[in-house]
Length: 353
Image (cartoon, rainbow, N blue to C red; front, side, top):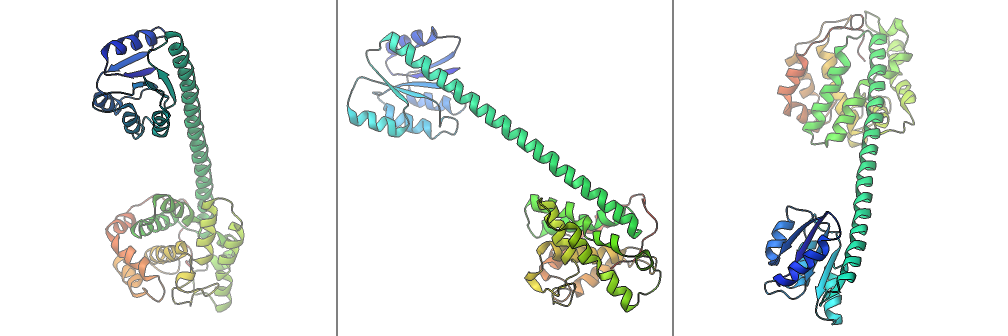
C-alpha cells in the first residue's frame, strides 16, 4: 500500500517512517512540506495518510480539507498527529475528514496498532470497491448482451416481415438508418437514437396478418382492400403490445403511430401534432421517403430529389415540421445512405402502405 507521512519536523518524519516501515512491504512517501505532499497526492492515490497538526505553511486541518477535495482522496484513512488535546482542534479535524488521532510524543506500539488497523480497514474498503466495480461491469455486460439479443431478435423478425412483404434486404435497414439520422439531427441522446434505430425495422410487423392477394397485388387496391391493408397497424400494435424492454416499447409506439399525420388526418386514431409519439413522427418521414424511392411491383421508384420535394411539401400537414427540418439538416448523410446497396434477400418489392 501507499502511505504518506507529512511532518515539518524531519526527526519525527524519520521516526514515523521507521516505525511504519516495519509493518510490511509498503511504499512510504515522506514530506516535510505540506504543499509538496498535496501536489504528489494529485497524481498518486495514497491508502493511508499521517499528518502533523502544527506546520508553518499549512496546519493539519487545512491540509486534510485540501486533501479531501481531491477526487482520489475522499475515503482514505487520515491520522492527525498532534501535541494538543484541545477539543476544538479535534472537532475541526474530524469536520475536515480526519479518521483518527495520535498524540506526540509517539508511542511506537500504539502507532503500529493504529496504523495496522487502518490499513486493514483500507484493504477491506478497496476490496469492496473493486468488487462493486466488478459487479457493475458484469451487470453492464449482461445488460449489453440482453440488449443485443433483443436487437438481434428484432432484426430477424424484420427480415421475416421483409420476405412476407416482398421487400429486398435494403428496405428496413434504409428506413431504420433514416430514422436514426433524423433522430440524431433532432438532438436526441445516443441511447434513444440507438433504440429508435433498432425498433424502426418492426414498423410494419402487422403485415404478417395481411393476405397475400392484397399485400402483393400489382394493381390499385379497392377501398375494401385498402381498409384491410390499414389493419396492419392495429395488428402490429397487438403483436408488440406489453413489451417490457425499452426496445419493444419503442417498436410498439412506432408500429401504431407511423401512419398518423401531423394534421390529424392519418390512421388509425387520427392523432395530431404532439399527440403522435415522436418516434412515430420520425418514422413517418423515413418510411414515406424510403417507400417513394423504392421500386414497387405496381410502380417504379421516384428520383431521390422528387421524394425529397414530397417530404418538404408535407411539412405541417402530413409530417411534423421539426422532423422535416431535421430531415433537411442531414440531407447529405441521407443521400449517402440511399446510395448504399446490398444483395436482395427476398422477392421483388411489394406494396407500400
